[in-house]
Amino acid sequence: MGNPILEVENLVKSYGAVQAVRGVSFSVEEGEVFGLLGPNGAGKTSTVEILEGLRDLDSGRVSVCGLDPQRDSQALKHEIGAALQSTSLPDKLRVMEALRLFSSFYQRRRNPEELLKRFGLEEKRNAFYSQLSGGQKQRLALAMALVNDPKVLFFDEPTAGLDPQVRREIYDIIEELKREKKTIVMTTHYIEEAERLCDRVAIVDHGKVVALGTPRELKTRSGGSTRIEVRLAKPEPDGALRNLEGVADAREVDGAYVLHSHRPPQTIVAIVKHLEAQGNELVSLEIASPSLEDVFIEMTGRRLRD
Amino acid sequence: MRNFATLTRMRIQLTLRNKMFLFFTVLMPFAFFFLYAGVFAKGQPLVVKFFLGPVVALTVMGSFWGLSAALVMFREQGILRRFHVTPVTASDMLASSVVANYVLMFPTVLLEFVFARSIFHVTNFGNLLATFILISIGTVSFASLGLVVASVTNTMQETQVINQLLWLPLIFLSGATFPLAFLPKVVQKVSLFLPATYLVQGLGHAIFESAPIWDHNVLISLGSLVCWAILTFFLSAQLFRWEPEVKVRRSAKLLVLATAIPFLLLGLWENKFGTITAQAQSAFDSLNGPPKSAPPPDAPK
Image 1 (cartoon, one colour):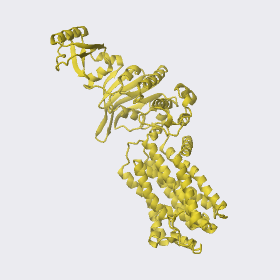
Image 2 (cartoon, rainbow over the protein chains, first blue to last red):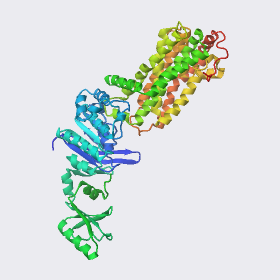
Image 3 (cartoon, rainbow over the protein chains, first blue to last red):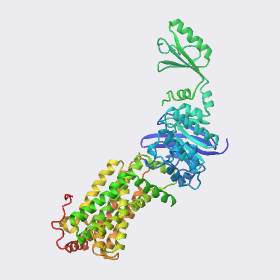
Image 4 (cartoon, each protein chain N blue to C red):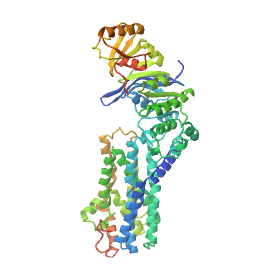
């Protein structure tokens, strides 16, 4: 590993009696897209907001661009760009005005015109913020994060609440930033987002990092088991499928049975034989290599739901 | 400093695009103006001049409404949060609110003077310098009061309730609606504890009696309002919250009472040794049995 641009060591943060972050550690290299993946309330946003200098930490050590976000927050703010969760702009502020206003706060600036073009907001340059669609607002939020050409970008749930098509637009934008070798720290609770965009992912649950690595590493670490999803004509009694050959784990999810197998061919043969013996029928069968979702289930025993 | 300037410009632009602004900062003060000058003073130049101080004071004091509401709305909607990740500081944010308010309010006050002259033939506006300085300090100090209200309330409803609670005594007990001389003795004593009284009486004194800045009572008004503005601004910067979910501490609410201390002391002193009430009385008497049966506040238009 080279020189990390951002480091977090044993970060702890509580709100009253609630421990939101319970000893999180990770570091991010320059040019890397780093994802914090986890359900809502896992402590992702708290972690990111501490890194941005918006919140004080209780204990631990963090450094961003060599600065302490708590002590040097003013200097840090010139170096970072952020698209926060649950923020907005004044309704009657125009798109171009917003970009100009926010770029005026920094010494190092990017041309607002160029950002406008790049984020596909040229036609909306004179529109009021209140007149923008959800996707346009989010594109503006990302553009605004770039006004100072920051060294580190923070995107907190950049696609939350957007419909799938708009979400893909945002992915394209982030992928382009990734090609430009921007350092990005993002949080998400969408598996596909983390798999598609992040170089490395930390899976966060209940304020702790439960797994950390590249999406590929994480998937192989999950035992490399293959996911087999079957739909049956009649329900099977609990546990019947779990005892079949090669099956590590079986559970019913939304009317289908999801099995994890270390030896998929044998398992499939066993399923077919078992069903025949039971007088049951196979309606559909899907085989997939393990996803981060499976990793998450394995680490936490729960599904990561939207 | 540059952040402060660009923020001020934004605030002015946004306010001008807001229809509520037109109502509170332009229409309402003019409604007051014509009510006082046309109805209470029956258009007599001398009486219009007498009421000009209270009318201008009302316009100036109204600042705190819009300011507190705008700031709380910015916080509730997560707009302040977005500024928090930039190098903008709390003082930038607060000072830009105060200055933008001043710039927006000033034309209204100026128009009140223009109307007094062109429509009601008031030819002499007393001591202009003292008047100008009192208006400026008054605007800044009541704007800062708005900032304090914003910093100790968590929701818009709370803000509006507190604003109402402040507004009523400020306008009824200060001489802004009923002339001070017209109020019962007990109320006169109470009024000497209110910042609004010093603005209303100071302005009245400067406009109606041409009192210069170095006049004893004008100095008291200026000095107390300046102290108060500094105290309230400083406190609102200390209590400033960017995040909607960060609630104000109970102890902070108590701290706000501290801003009342200067006027508590001044009120005690004025009640014992002061001449403000006496002066208000003599100004009122000089109108020579002013508008027969002094104005009921809710006089029909």
